[in-house]
Amino acid sequence: MPNSQAPSSSARSLLVSDFDGTMTRKDFYQLALKHLLPPDVPNYWVDYRSGRITHFEALQAYFAAIRVDEEAVRAIVARMQLDPRLASGVADLDRAGWDVVVTSAGCAWYIQILLSEAGVEVPVHSNPGRFEQGRGLLMELPAEGPFFSPTIGVDKAAVVRRGLVDHRRVAFAGDGFPDLDAARLVPASLRFARADLAEALEREGLGFQPFNVWSEVARSLCALERLESSS
Image 1 (tube, helix red, strand yellow):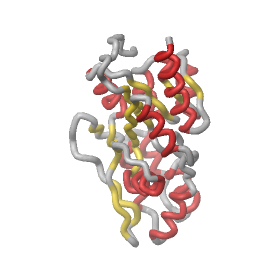
Image 2 (cartoon, one colour):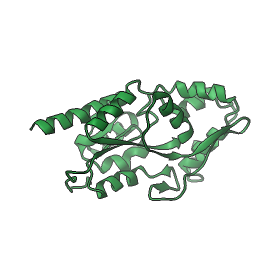
Image 3 (cartoon, one colour):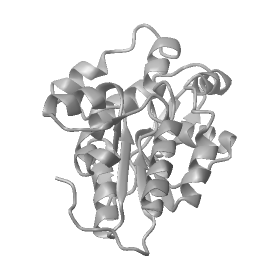
């Protein structure tokens, strides 16, 4: 259930956002599976669904199977299609009193590439990694801390709960099933969803704000601030 405590008047609001499929149009994993992995790679998702390995271990195994050079991998990263209005959206939110933090079960290696190219500096909670020729994209679990998850690496719901405990207004934006626990914690007016997350919320009868590209989330939250400040 959403936290019922009113945010402190002095606290900045917080948007917790997924990355793959939320700030970008496409997921790195899906592009890698189609364009970067050899055809004989095992189906690690079968092992994940059967409980033999975790979600993190499945992604880790797929990424480690990449055998092309770094230039080819970076070309696929570019095809994730980061929202071209991301930088302006983050700046608009900052002026409106909103901080943005990225939470991702993917790899910080490609997230930082795209954010750096866009000139965007926001906190990122994701799984660290590095690319090594002949060994693939080597993703690791993050150091244990308040947002650590042994199954996906980053506990997105814990990031949301920290904001609520700090008496901040918290919004969440995501597109996948791993986003569901975090999305449940915020009110419908601050819950932004598309794709699999939207379907999961509809099945639970939970309201949300639909979006197609991330900058629509930024515009909605800025409009909310203007509406509240004029009332």
